[in-house]
Image (tube, rainbow, N blue to C red; front, top):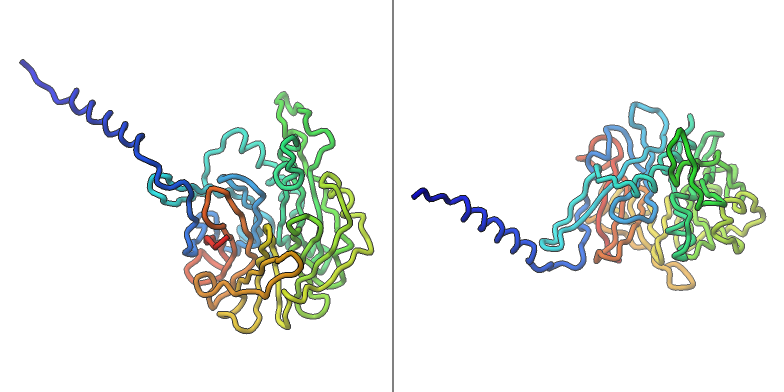
Length: 355
């Protein structure tokens, strides 16, 4: 009688697989690593910095300024960042080669078109992107799929000025056929950049960011000599009219935000909910430009706090941005730095910070 172990091995494998499936999920929430991590293959040997991420899930389109390819100026480049954590082990991981489902591909492709539309022979810096469906309208009924409002700065005409582009459509539910293929994004091209004259001056103006209510735009400018953080208080504008009414504004109240500004250079403000992050070379830092944060208490911003040596170094840390996910215990901050150990020049980094 011939005896074989194959049936027994097969049963054991099935038992192990069943146990793995039944293993309790110990982690209902993930945690972004609190150790600064280089974004790896997203970076190049040239300068990569000034990133932006619209509100998305774990597969995020990352738009940033880069000199890759031996350029002398900064152009916008689009990459993707996909992160996840294991609910059984709690281990966090990320990749720049995410799985592109059709829905993700269609929704994020136009962001690359935005870069193609605005890149020039000058420097394109500080991209800031809002999704109409996810960030601006948010009524649960919007059909403005893959439509974005993008602000950025460029020195194409001399000093840095702030510009706007968008691909908002009055009739977003329609599909359009291009070369025989019907797609909900076939017509989602961007308009040529439009300067926002109410924000611009004869000096350098850049890094625009909306506040939590979209009622103000914060930005940086050296119109008074050094770079300070300014606030432009907007009139009431419906989210679906921002792309048409912002370029037409004039006589907007603009003020330097005293709580955030110093005698040094204060740059790159970015707001998420009630938190503002920025970079500054003010005295008391660890060297070069450091990252700071401030909290909105309902009437004013708190005194800026240095993120300390867990984030900052003696090198330059620049243009921080925040993203928050409900199934994580902390927030993800992305920033750029020319610290030693990168691929070359400025690299993009990430770190988890307290919500």
